[in-house]
Length: 491
Image (cartoon, rainbow, N blue to C red; front, side, top):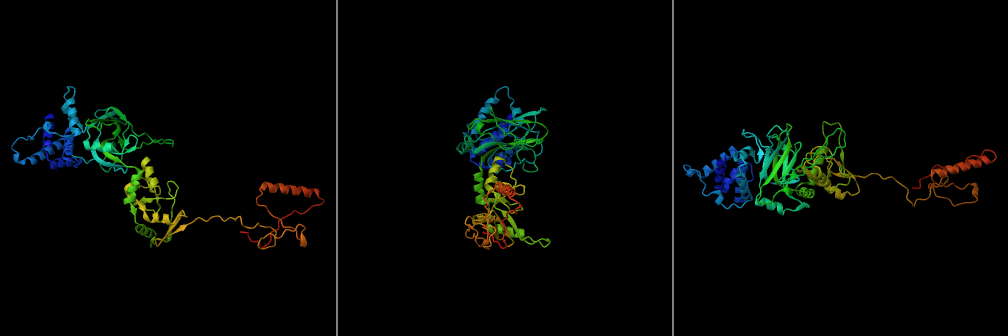
């Protein structure tokens, strides 16, 4: 096994750029970069992933490259030790070679038992690869380790799977020169993603039981569980990419990652990626750049929604749309919805992205169906309406695509300038006649009702009137306020 690895290294060192790109493309690795980066990537492939298929491909490329010299033994023009390869992997592999020279390490066993440092199954037919779903808040820059199955090495419930890798100088510079999202957290990161080993469809991140991740000599924090207030409901854990950057060696040294996991029957795969983490503000700006739907297209959609269905007995003449966001109950600022949604109602993109940044669910708050980021659109027609209609919280779309505001009816109240309402006056206008203290013309003075008095005051006055009636001789009729017919409200 050791002889085959040395032979494969020698072959790789003699490859041209096109050969290196074909080899990396064969295993699904990135083919971009300068020649020394391609060589580093290919050597890393040989060092940690030299399966029979990869070794066969290397020999095939080498024999094609030196077809004219097929009768000769495959000897590269120069030995790898003599070539000045300036890469973190080459310098890091020298450390690995030194450690392999110790009598306690079995060289063939180390490279035969592990695939990219992870335990692997015996060679089988080529299987479909595990794919992970794309995450809107993470842009993949490089794939450091393809999704590889976690294979138990014994019957123990708690398993450990190690992984050893090194970064190229370009990757180190990308991390070092990236901005900080918050103190100590870089935007360019090395993240670990774990999912079920299922090749039928792209998989979401899913942690195995009893997961623990150790980077070099320190354990990395893993997101905890969301508390559950409902009885009998288990708390859920947000399964996100695990940021390893702050515990890694950003130098020529190799990094060792150990994943501890519980073996309870389900199969999991892990992958390592160099990513750039995005913020909700950046995603909002991108949506505003490429995700606005033209007002005329939105108008055509309204017409299609309200188009008369000949099989329907009820004709729809309009549909109401609220200008209030269902998420935060505030007026919409950036109205958006998923293109797959059947409704015209929108929610606010600003708050929707902020909520998914903290707890990613990507579910529409209107219809409770999936609304992923790549399906979001900004409603250009409703954006225009929001600027033109500032005094209403609801509008109605009509069959011709036009719209009209729906304003809530305000309760009518008397203004302070209204005259005092006089009860018992014959004046149809309700105006107060000139005061007559002596009650001329045989008419009693009109009773004025003070609406500022509370009910308790009225009750006290009625009690006093009753007491006076009891003191007088004989029954006296109670005083009443006479209401004239034709009395007009003062308002």
